[in-house]
Image 1 (cartoon, rainbow, N blue to C red):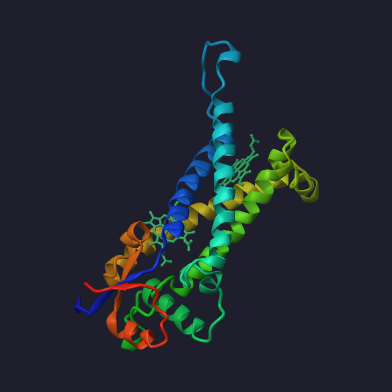
Image 2: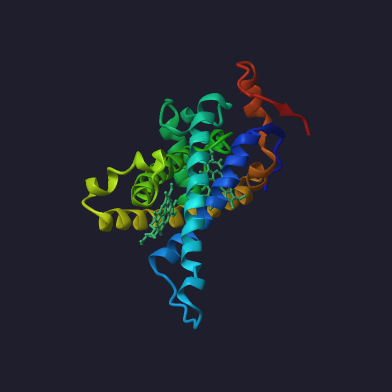
Length: 243
Ligand code: HEM
Ligand code: HEM
């Protein structure tokens, strides 16, 4: 691997990192408890029915994680307006003119495993690359579907105004069956995302050697100095630290 002239750059602010790991935990708990709800274990026991309440506990954990997931998501929406440019909603949508160039570069190198002949394109992304950015938008849409169908199903068991806001969803979808089916299918979308996302984070770390994995813990990545210097004049880099 060619040794490059790297500089340490602060990318992921603490709120983004906290959001990320709370989100990871909530999603893992929601998937595990959700799959138990969809296919409950038949536990044989001689205890009184009133003494075994494990399925109620599974549902309770699902709903608790669901509230955490929901409020965490609202917080991240807020942060995409007040956070740094890497956390901004603009970093995830195809809004700038080089968007497709970067998208095809990532597709070619990361997914089709081709070599990049144009050195200008290597380690082009400082924050999210454009495929990652758009994949978070898709995940956000899936999360919205989970929130609507999930709180829709939950609204019949809670009188609180928040779940009640979604009481129209189940009748709108024609009943519980469709709401649960959509909720279930979207879960597999999350599972697919996790496999691809974790693989690509580790793959980038290995391919580019810019500290991708540790960036979601410490917030820093390593960026080619040439790339920073060309941007420094426009004061676009928020905080840099020499190594
Ligand atoms: C705001 C978020 C959420 C709420 C309010 C919510 C609520 C619910 C409710 C009320 C049920 C039905 C429980 C029952 O019938 O006993 C359910 C089932 C389920 N949930 Fe969630 N949920 C949410 C998010 C998620 C997420 C993010 C996932 C996975 C990524 C997930 C996966 C599942 C699965 C797999 C089921 C079983 C569906 C089936 O019947 O096949 N949920 N959820
Ligand atoms: C349940 C598993 C996971 C889920 C659902 C998940 C979800 C996400 C989401 C939604 C983002 C966008 C963050 C934002 O802009 O707010 C993200 C970014 C990121 N995640 Fe994860 N993540 C998972 C596991 C992991 C793991 C195990 C690592 C390894 C350290 C990791 C490392 C990263 C990194 C480095 C980024 C920034 C990548 C980029 O440049 O786009 N994630 N993840």
